[in-house]
Length: 77
Image 1 (tube, rainbow, N blue to C red):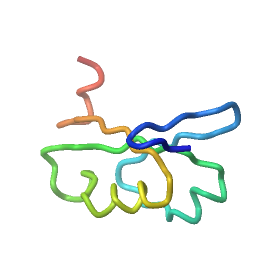
Image 2: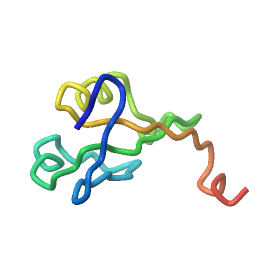
Image 3: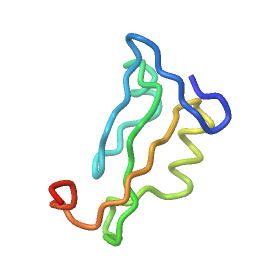
Image 4: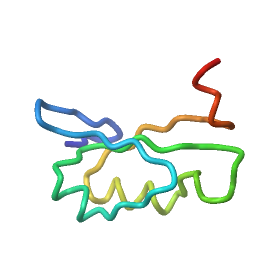
């Protein structure tokens, strides 16, 4: 459940992490997804979340966590 800009997760709620995939809001709601992890990146070929996408999630009550990642190896330091 979102409260302003915060997503509150309860036991059984899901948070999906995806970069290139684009599941629909309906698919996420059917799966009890309450928040998504999405990416900001220098890569402009489709990985980066758009403002319209973020607005769509917020309108549907799905929280958004943003991660900046410029390469696939950033997480490894």
